[in-house]
Amino acid sequence: MQRSITDSPHDKFFRFAFKHVDLVRALTQMTFPANLLNQLDLNAIRLESGTWIDSKLREKRADLLFSLPILRTNEDPKTAARTALLYLLLEHKSTADHYTVLQVLSYLLQIWEDQKRKNTDLTPIFALVIFHGSTRWNAPTTFRELLPMEFDAKDLQLDFKITIFDLTTWTANQWDHSPILTSTLQLLKYNRSPDLSDLLFGILDRIRVSAIRHTLEEWFQACWNYVMTTNPYMTNTRIQEIVDELLSVEFEPGSAADQLYRQGHREGVAEGLADGAEIGIIIGRIQLLQQLLGLEVSPSNELLQLDIPQINLIATSLEQRLNEK
Image 1 (cartoon, rainbow, N blue to C red):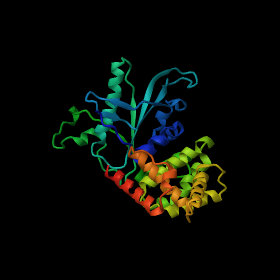
Image 2: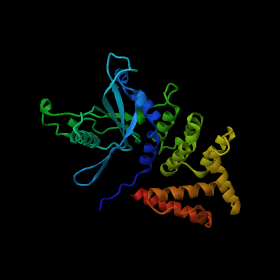
Image 3: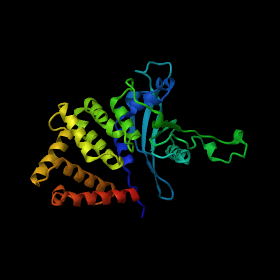
Image 4: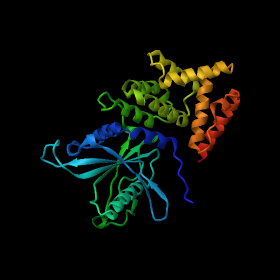
């Protein structure tokens, strides 16, 4: 039986954020050279399937794959016929894996082999690796770097290079195209850092101001889940302070932050607890960890029958299991 792949918190947040085409468009504008951008129809970006199964039935999965139509040159973009597609392959790494070049190349070969089987033209592919590790990227970025250096036959050796968007050297600025993209990249960059405690309010507030109203709750939930499962420095007290700050700027009733605060408070009062928001946050963490581990999710009303030390013990146990995977 084929072994299923369990997504890490990084995988889940990355795929959630960049399934939004407007973020991919902004990222493309940030990372592509201007002469290439002028040849692309950025308004027609489309999410494509990024999973293939090889002959040995082992799943190989690119994080996200998008197609962008290429416009005919020297013609009016409004009337130009689409002649080809540029595939944008997004991959993310939290560690500088020595064989990332080989991994990305295998994804590209899978795409081209599939096109060959379907007797369609091979398409150009731009592979971008977003790196959000704790230190700068120091792994190979070309195929030649994986080969023995003492064998000097570069003119005969096929090479391949990947582009690394290293978040350790990236800083947000007011000229960024998309406020939500900025918040997303900051969450990826500071996910394990103590600095996130000071940055989180600004990150969430930027999303609050910029997100489309009907997507705001899912954005907040995704960010909240990511922070709670990756950052060891974020305390329940600090999270409550951030929620209170967001509410103090007249967060609309019914929003995700408002619901999180009020639900936790109501559940706490019902059980006679001094800090209802704290119990609500811990219960949410337990249910998220159970989802990540592929376990049955405990109903909130069952967890509310336990006291704080008991549910803290459950949360700690689940976090340990996730870290050991």
